[in-house]
Image (cartoon, rainbow, N blue to C red; front, side):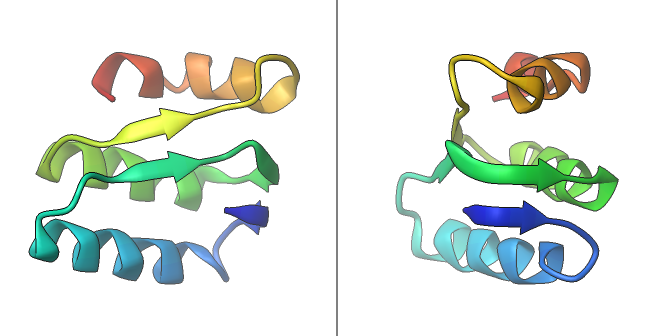
Amino acid sequence: MRGEIDLASAPELESRLREAFERGVPIIVDLSETEYMDSSGFRTLHRAAARGALTLVVPPEGLLRRVVGLAGLGEVM
């Protein structure tokens, strides 16, 4: 995912994740080029984690890594 994951782009992410689950392929969400993610992005990732296994790649440093940790995504993925 590049750029921002927000109310406008989260539905596309959700659609792609749904398609991947239906195909049964391993799912890797790479956030290393994501500059911003709002609550709709976090909600989409939490819903996806409830459906099945996925791997989340986050930058080693920075605000996004901290917020991902605070949102508990590291514990469910």
